[in-house]
Image 1 (cartoon, rainbow, N blue to C red):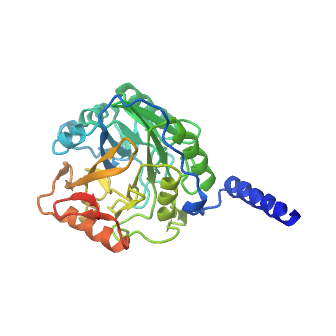
Image 2: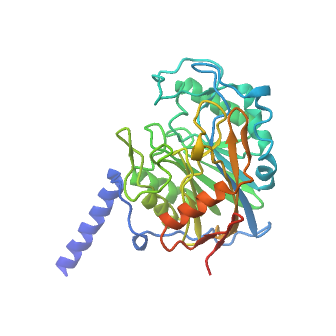
Length: 368
């Protein structure tokens, strides 16, 4: 009896240490409590929610040189606007700042960039249909806290929600169709809410999950470049920086109650999978980066992922709406089928036994 008590005491101590040291590993699903949906909440809504997700957005920059699209960017979202607006909620990653002044502390070179998008272009995001933009990336602090505050102020004025910066707004909530949708955004930089810290992930998701009906997780992670399309196993390093163990992280989020997990950061699209009837998109690539970021080859693939979930957050169906970026112009419809073929191939090769079926048309369903 004494040995059993000591064993239980040791286990409790181990778990306490595990979640307070930020070990980069995640507990297996059987060890994680998955919270129930909010009980007794009346449903004054349709039973489904239509969502749209995109990758990186950097509409143009004035630093160190001016690289802006023509006509103030008014044509950037012409081909994608109807798809984004048709969704109940649309999500993306804001790769950079919305500010008009300041000098970056970063050393700008071929492998280091600083993005300063004029605030006059910000209304284009609202007009396109975006409801949420992640700030948990490696460019949101390009112009220090002045640039960060400017970005937050502009998004607040437009009514666009955001999250992902440590100690500021780590998560947010949007109410739609009688549902409370919680959104957590994670990154790999010191000022972001870190997905590389298991204790932070556990703390935030277990805090938010009981407050909402549907939980969406955004993450910025993975190594960058045209050769990084395949999702590796284990931890990814890029320029000696830990960019995360993304398979384990995404599964861990679902184990803790996340209903959708979508990623960005590698600047190329990556595979998608269904895990416990929840959709994970490991990278949606560059979405609207007409200048200042390479869009050559696979780096220009710019899909919109649309999907329907029920009021429990379970995946019902989805569709890949394919776009390819044109230099200086933005995302334009892909009539060649190239983008869908790439996502189908990656999802088949990188997720053995994937329950997600991606049709040649881009339609998505659960394997029967």
